[in-house]
Every structure is written in C-alpha cells, then in structure tokens.
Image (cartoon, rainbow, N blue to C red; front, top):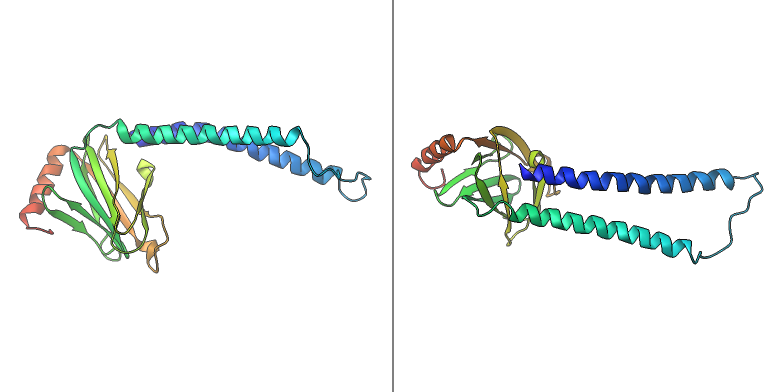
Length: 212
C-alpha cells in the first residue's frame, strides 16, 4: 500500500541527515573532551560568539529542517489525495479502553472490550476506504504499524483519512497515546479480505440487525 512506500521514501531522506547531525555533534564533543581535558594545557576559548561559524551552522540546520518539513508535508498531501474518492466509509471511535468500528452504509458495528474481546476491522482489498476517527472520552491514537499510519482521535472532533489494502492479510494495531489505566490493552486487528468475502461478511452482520 502507498503509505509504506511514502514512509520508506521519507526514511531514506531522514536517516542520512540524522546520522550526519549525530556524527557532527559526537565529533565535536569528543574533540572538546580530548583537547581540553585536565593536564593538556589547552584552555577553552573565552569567546562568547563566532561571527562566521554560528550563523553558518544556523543556516545549515534551518535549511535541513525546512527541507525535511517540506518533503514530509508533500508526502502527506500526496498520500491523502492520490487514492481518489472513498468506496467504503468506516467510522472509528476510541474509548476507554477499546475501539468501535461502524459501517454506516450497512448500520453494522464491531465493538470489543479489549480484555476478552479484541475488535477486528474487516476491510475489502483493492478499494479506497475513507475513515473518520473520533473519541468518546479522552485523546487516543489509532496506530496500524503495518500501514505505518497514525492518527489522533479527539473527543468531539473527526479526523479523516483514506487507506487502501492491496492484498489480503491480518494485522494488529494499538492505541499509541497514553489514555489511562488500561491503555496497554487497547489493541485491535485489521483483516483485509477479497471484496466478495467482505460483502458476504457485511451482509451476514447486517442480517443480525443494527449494532450487530
């Protein structure tokens, strides 16, 4: 799915820059420790500023930060816009301490307690799915590591995003925002099946009546 490729693209940009900054800081620290350690006879500089080096370093770091921010924003915009219109809508509600998945077109709800019953979000492969995410109480965060996607769930507000699952699979997700006593149990599953199997599953759930 495209979220993974976008993440990989950003990681190839972020990792070398982060490594370079780390090495520069480490080299500077080691140089200072060796050169100015006790007994070497080298006194630290008494200058309060360096008129050339400091502005240059500031420009380099500001430029790197802007470069990464622009690339991240572009990747996020591309991810949200390139999938096209949603073919299925699902509302996700986080609550202390579990999840509910509601399919409004069929009035089907999948809900668990995350202690003895972990809810499973069932989705069809190959279709663009529009999600609206909210919270019934405090701030939660819906995180599906496989898709490399996180989204905040706020009470009284909906966050919208779209995903497409290109092949069948079964993956685990969790809440990534500390939300209280049983935050660590707030897990869920995502199961992607063929459109035919999804339609059969949804019809079976809908036949049980609203809230099934």
